Image (cartoon, rainbow, N blue to C red; front, side, top):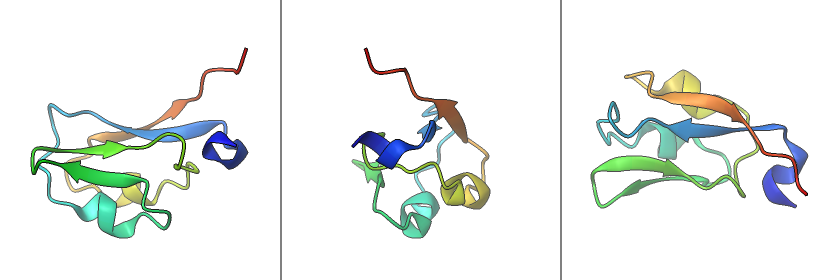
Length: 71
């Protein structure tokens, strides 16, 4: 089940990400990774929307977004 039923997931604004890795370090499910040292990326299928990465991000570039309804 995608996101284990959570109606939201975290999404990173790549333009403001400084690729510090803080978000990846606090994610309890390993849903966040830093891609090629350039920016963080969230796997929506693994993200449960707990918000830990959002609170930990020093630049505030992570936001909670609504999942699209399954068709």
